[in-house]
Length: 494
Image (tube, rainbow, N blue to C red):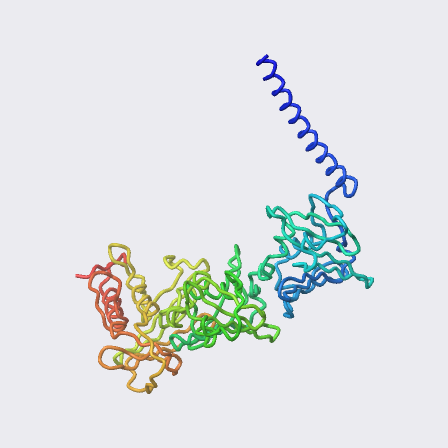
């Protein structure tokens, strides 16, 4: 009997489970059937892109975003809380994805609430409204209510319908995104050919510079950027400045951060420390204002974009450096293939270097001329080092020891004059004027350059090293080598 009783209990439990399973299966079947009958692909299409003039999202506390389209269904502009953004300022991939999600969102269920009461689903005061303004003057909208308890979706209603839709969570994610996510991270991204000039102010060091943008240099393999620093002196930029200029013309922010003007002081924007000016070929000027570094970022704003932003220092290499550290640090420039004559006067002694390389620019070829005072200066030591090249290098590798733009030295008591003539007939004259007992002021073409050099640039004998000679001592050694060379043009200093 006990066994029969146990079997009866088991049968009852099994029967109950079967009933529950049947109820669940029937409910799921009814739910699936209802969805399949109403919308086979489980997607709401309350408006189509080709119909749209604009798409508006209204959110909590008056927040709003408007996306506008042209006749080709391309986004032409967007507004956020009354501030307009041109299409060039928008991230087209992100904005197109948002439009697609807002127009065609997926759902997991749809139903008519009992008694038509939609209030308990959040529609008495919807969190969001999506409004589609169409080209024919009509309007469709979607109201978005509460999130589901498990946050797997949200309730929504299309205007003119009494059905409540259970939209997938992707719709809620789209609605709650920050508007800044739809902005292009490039404040601007100009081609070099679009820019005429770039200038910069560094209030931290009380320094500034201006660079002229030239046509790209064609190496035959790639196009290289070509810039000329025109202020505070006419110089070539070094690699650090070139990298900074390239980063400026392709100005990409790390993140957009809304900063109210009355809070600018907290981010250093009430008195920006770094100011960049781009003058375009079109005549337009674009300005960028940046704070000092705060907690690992520069904060800033630009004249061509209404949004404030932050940027990592690594994205603007060399921004904090003085102009002197961003330009070629040699006093004058010259290369074997572009210099034809150097005329120098030191200690009332004048000497002339003549240089004429052959068509292949091979210095060591017999048909390449390199003379000192009309005598062959291609004289070598036993290690193959050339005395003439040592003299040439002492002139064109003359390092600047420091700069001082504030002093106003007189062009008098000139101790050395070096005039360089290039194959283009361009002429540059360097004059060195004593600055105390150990330095010289550098005048270039009779204007003080701001450069100051050590006295050793003229007077330094580096012994047998064949490098690091001053111009005067290099001249003396080259002359000594020419006077005492062997028949094979070799001379070793005793």
